Image (tube, rainbow, N blue to C red; front, top):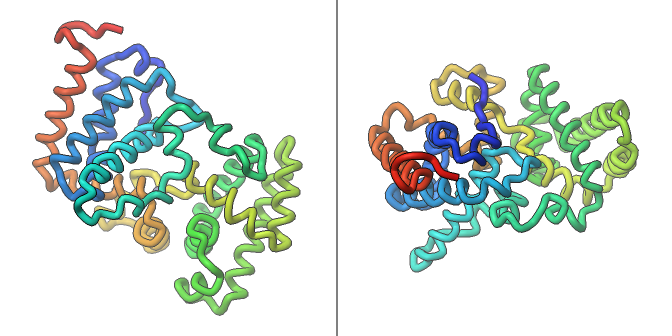
Length: 307
Ligand SMILES: [Zn+2]
């Protein structure tokens, strides 16, 4: 089962079928995301409805530098925050997941471009793109090698901003230098991956500085790239296997760490969606409501889809 994503041109043409497919594919996880934060299914349904309508309205400005799922979740996150602010009489932590979606605030408001998002950072946007590619490659090869502890450690350091001291204790490593060693080897490998790429020069300089202990770089750029690009997010089928209890120990260690300790909001939403999918008939009713409202929006006259 590979991850489906819609054809943007068909969405822009307001094709009902493609929008309904969007709804069938993403509503469950959007609903799970909103419900986890609001604890209120009715409010969550409203949020998802607003999210879908916002997605239809904003699709002409969709920026292909992001995935469609990021686009949807960015809108959903803002609608959720709006809702929680309105309900602020209650002691809900609105800022609780603010760090979960770096850069998406701007995306959902669709006024800022990715270059505005990266403005003020050390790396040029091209170098950031390359950084994303080599990190992705590193994650993939580490996953294929079955080195899940290593993957957890690097995720904790790069994405979670953990200190070496906390990291070795969490993973029962020998001592702090074991963590430093894993980090050192990862950066070394990243340099190799950067070196074989065209125009990877400023990235190489950057990695060399990181290798010599300039952690400022790792703290800002790597963390943001790692999270924005969802570099370590397991595909939905891995989450499905975790839900079903059929995931092997290694990947299960990493996926659970990613969900429970890194608290990845995307994967949590997917996980919740998968976990309740079979059990929860209530969701079917909500899905049916959403389907009707989206159709009404797409076809104001109830007949044909007009642009
Ligand atoms: Zn994730």
